Image 1 (cartoon, helix red, strand yellow):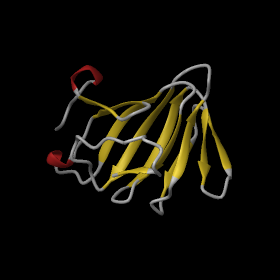
Image 2 (cartoon, one colour; image 1 turned 135 degrees about the vertical axis):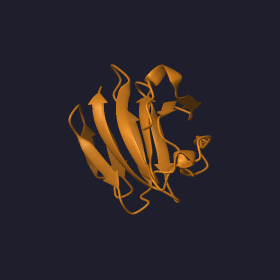
Image 3 (cartoon, one colour; image 1 turned 180 degrees about the vertical axis):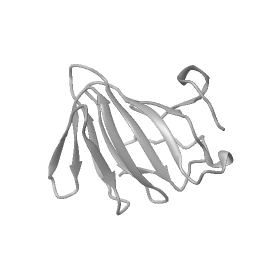
Image 4 (cartoon, one colour; image 1 turned 30 degrees about the vertical axis):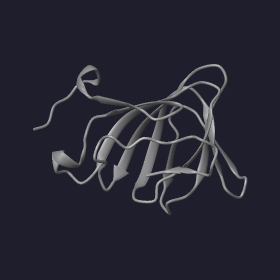
Length: 124
């Protein structure tokens, strides 16, 4: 059995927030589970070229915007899945941080972080 608490897991600053990584590739399960904070008022152009991702919103609000400009509102109880390695904007509302529980397949190694330098989508 694997048992972890939020205060004991690896935290990775990813540019516009922090990703607390509960499960990693070394755990042998084939997927990663994170508790991710997206800072209020931020907008991030992201892409996962090597992973599929699903995110479940548990706090805050925001939106996911696809590259066609379609906006999908995020609020507690909402899930979105990036099933085509989709480039997208992740936007946190201005009032409070957005908190997501995310699953990545295959699993992350643990140190992956976005580079939000404006030179295109950040990816790993």
